[in-house]
Amino acid sequence: MRLTERYARLIAYFEKARPTAQSELEYENPFQLLVAVILSAQCTDKRVNMVTPALFAAYPDARSMADASVEDIYGFIKSVSYPNNKSKHLKGMAEKLQRDFGGVVPDDVELLQTLPGVGRKTANVIGAVIFNQSVMPVDTHVFRVSERIGLTTRSKNPLQTELTLEKHIPPEKIPVAHHWLILHGRYVCTARNPHCTECGISDICRYYKRNEK
Image (cartoon, rainbow, N blue to C red; front, side, top):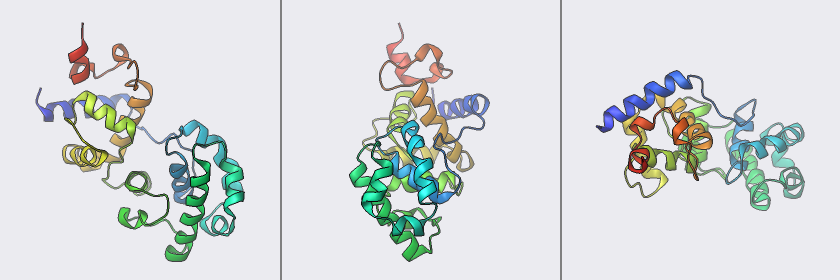
């Protein structure tokens, strides 16, 4: 199967199966999503959603979080992974956001990456989800699923995967395609024992074809 055909088939399937795919993180504004995505690093969305209501009630904006102590922030997020580092990142992020951007989350992925705790993936999530930009966040799910299906071939790192996906997915589809791949990896194309018999795109999947009996 030609690569263009594989992408076309994948897009057609998900447009029908998951036309309104969206983040499973719970948020009400760009600042809250930025906080939630920082917390979600190596942590489940479910766990993040358990701690953010109280965190957002205490610190609804950059100014209030910037004024908080690292210790106080830690008290709200201690059940997520790496709470010590994330507490420092959140305070540092809020301070810089308030100082340099007037508390407003910037719409530029390069500027976003100047914030503590914000790497390329997190910046791309904000760009795609909040600002509907044609940027592809690549987490472990997107990296794994892309390689298994055959959207990428021997990608060495997330950046290679990101650039390949952005090259072959129509720009207007990239923000929702990000969610398609994440949710597919989370519930169907799991890291261990993928549910190939339940997959609607197994007919184009390189991994399935190799392991089909």
